[in-house]
Length: 547
Image (cartoon, rainbow, N blue to C red):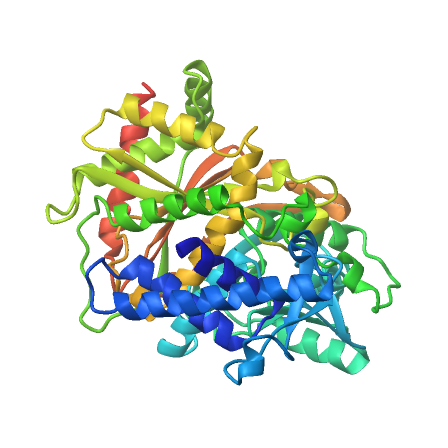
């Protein structure tokens, strides 16, 4: 029944089926996650599941009566309304099949409008953003906030920056997409609409620094670029359902390349050919999971649901609730960074595994004794672009959501060495040379999307330790200097934490390892966060024998 319910929920998301079908299947699916056997709801659940089975049986009747085969169904057809055997009894509207070329493809719905269904991660982040915006004065959880310190001597810098932003809209139109009713929407602009977009998304700010801007920005609809003349900084804000961490770095590379070598003449109208497809369509994966795949995805999802929160640091939650989004940064010296990388290579471990293990040990040291101190549980983020074919693995599709979280848990106490080896295996083998996991990603993230739409999701205790994300060496995706004398002096990447779990991003730029801890001061104390970062640094250097 669980597999059946999730397939129906996934079916509605991908093919735009009726709202009743979606809510029915989602209600049943969530009951399996949040209810326990023996609850008074179980009889009702069984009745709903049987009703849903009748609906699926009816679809099979449609297959036989119209010549549509199950293979054609999996290839991508869409339900709309008219007759069915159940509908003929006056109970519910029945289905009719309409052919589509691909399951999640961008479709032209009017002369100036293209749309496609959101995938699991896009849907998850859009719901999170919508819920928090409604509860916290428009502030959206997981908004990406990246600052670039620019050195460039140009007489027309403002107009050049604006033109490059306009060029990015043309080259990577996903930048200007919005989400409406679980659909990603792009509108082809005329001259008036294009100017309105520029006026609302390219902003020259009087703020003295990105930090000042960060504390004063207002809600926004689409990805927005700010230019701060007083500090020579550029700041981009974007929804996490539009772009991810690695994508932001690729965006900066494309943007600075456009700034260095601008295109003078380009005409809007063919942007749909460059809209980012979902990963499943790129790989050609089936939208309908097998029973084995659905069972595996569900087991993976439930392993996370049942294990978090694990060990957590002590928090100092404010009675007022969510406060201000904050970041705390720790930057290693160039010499220390080089020594750290050298030590990791000698031990045949990655910097990512080494840092993550050090963070776990730091949390152990400052653990809340009331938390689950016998287990560490999280879901780290994996950049999946290396597994995509060209051009989707390049900066041409930087503005996209091409990553996946994946659960990880380990029993405590554990030595630093044991943690490193476990994490090394986790990071090295979870997706690499593992096409089965790549295919499973869609089904796993669809479960996330289904779960976040339940009110019970927001009543569950959130992990109080940070979710880690390693962005690696940024120079793999961008350059520190570009033609025309453009120089990137500094670069920071973070996310807004309005509610829930904090984020710990780390990466290397200009030969310096950087920690960036994103949190909300309504739930976390700045001094505590600084302590965790310093403790992580100390453990890392001590374990790697770096003096």
